[in-house]
Image (cartoon, rainbow, N blue to C red; front, side, top):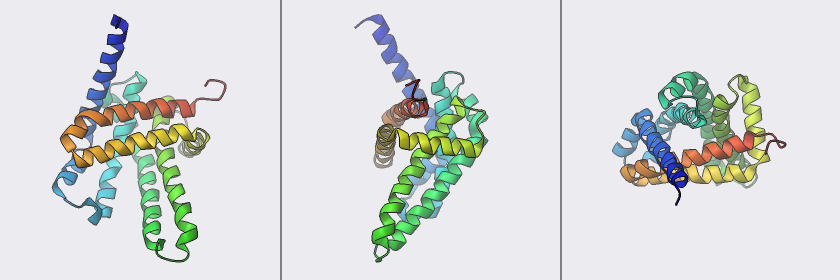
Length: 207
């Protein structure tokens, strides 16, 4: 392989490892709780609150991958906006999942559960894309950003599906094998999520 190829590979590995370490530090309370509690699903509200920290760290990762800022600088710059957006995402997702659990054994659930499941996926997808908007379009207002994110997530749904699949696989791996998972997958998954989100937000004539 040429020197340029090796340089490209090393750049990818360096960024992935940097993100793995930064994400672990930024989400230390959540990781500690996952390590201590054997059955996290038994305490849904507690862990739902802890997942709020994921938003600012993902926004910081996107800012770092955008190339203008370090992870720490991006975390400081986007913290408040990312926290607000991700708190809304976590709240809406929590409500939808609670509705799914409450209705899945009822007659009405046959009609509403599929709808709520689709809405949950849309909320999470739009949430990830909205975090990518922070470094890409920092001047965009809150509600305009959410509408833009939802539209982009639906318009290029195949990229959205790939992003959610990668992030879900990384989350499952970290939950099952924290040390190995944190050392390998989160950074790679976020690099893919950043590329897909940026592509989703690109105008058709720019694609």
